[in-house]
Image 1 (cartoon, one colour):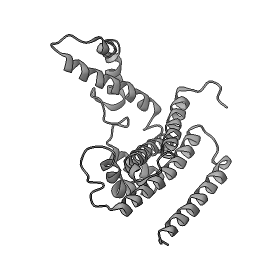
Image 2 (tube, rainbow, N blue to C red):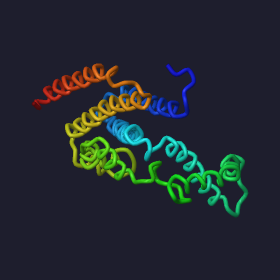
Image 3 (tube, rainbow, N blue to C red):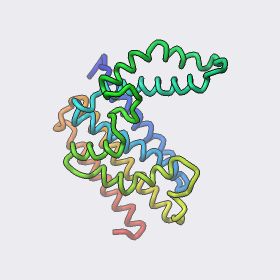
Image 4 (cartoon, one colour):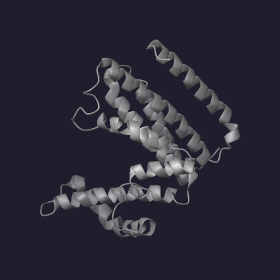
Length: 236
């Protein structure tokens, strides 16, 4: 449909490819012991869908330009951290690209930061807000508190099981509990993958009427599967 994708469409396609890659990864995870990888998948998908919601529903405030500019800003932020680390010592050749990036792009990127976020500093996220604030904003745009519910009740567990060396996400659970966490992560991943596809199609200006029936069938199929799996555990 788009022989020469615009930069925006290329970005949205890249995000969707990340979603597909996560689905291919999670298809290989078949044991409760895979909970850490499954949690990482669900966490990443959650963040992707929040970002796509902001891009699709309020592109004036949450623009693709901010998203792409933030990427360059992140590269500069990391390069400058490298430069500070190397101060007072010879720079190995492996760091030459980072130092060249600073010399060639810093002025441009700092000017873009000031223009888009009103600060010369690198922002923690492309929106200029913290992730929990973006969750609230995404819900405001949707008119429901879906993301806040998940962020409050589940997100911390996904983070605990994704990074760090402590056992905050697992210590209190026996084998059955871990299996339940796997189910939560899988359910979130399936839902967010579908939402991501819907939002990318919206960003591509594909009419909802052309896709609603398909996504309705997917939602119904997931509900049937969820009921069947819960039934195996005696949950009704």
